[in-house]
Length: 410
Picture (tube, rainbow, N blue to C red):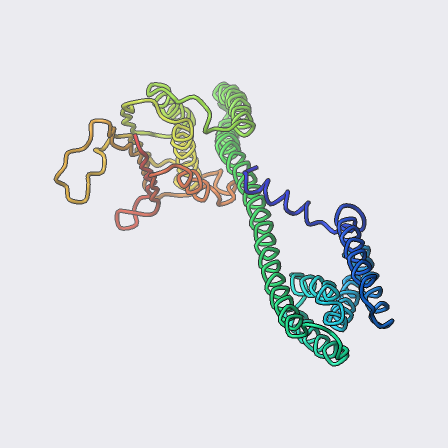
């Protein structure tokens, strides 16, 4: 899992609904501090009883809002709107300090991402109306009323901006979680595609070859050539054993990270291709092969891709062009030159390797119905995982032959 995925998971856990814990405890503590501040202020100055009552309701609403679980969104909203109304009514009588519940409630309403924007607009309008009503209820003996008004308006605007900022942060965190989930889903799909590709390549080659062999055995038995049929059966057993070995290699590759696998020597890479060609000949196919040795060791992913692509191309030839000769060529070509074509190729540039497999179009073989049509798609997926690789497939020569051409960095 990547760092971004882990970060998104941590954010998701941090923002899970809490019905008890540090979130509500924090609000309870600061609500108590706020209540003590009001009590200290009121002890030194005479206030009307309704102001005491309103401030008490504001503190209670604040604490209740902290205790209400996130699953009860409507009750939370009711508590927040109550805090806004009460805080606005006493903001001027309590020298702005009484308006703290208004600020907290406004931030909570606007900052909740799952609520529509209109809920924040309604809360802001309600806060303005509550402040206006509180101004009308302010006694004429209140001192420095102008300063209190400026402070209350500043608190209102700052609270709205903090709420908007909190909403944007929540939106960014949600987007991060969505991206992390999409990344995890893409990784799972990539793993599934990789497994499917390996299984297809192993089964299409191994079982397809067995079908060809068993079809030949059936024909030999019908003609009374028992000895030759027995030889074909023994060859089929060898194919089955090779298929099992190939399947084990595929499983081992799936269990490991191919990018960390050791490079494949030039000789081993060429030998793997030659082995597939000999297997095709053993099944009665004619192959004209010209295999150049790569100039250096190939990355494991590149060597595997070349082997699997040749394997699939030969299987397709047996299925869809039975009896037709196949031409296989692995050659080196110079590396791509700069666009101005003036500078020579750098000594470190080993050029490119081109694997080309062609066969004339012909009648479908006995194994034609065993494929699922995923071979070419698997080729494209393999080539897409190699930087700088290219694949071209299709009918050429005025519709007379089929060609598979893959080009990879040498």
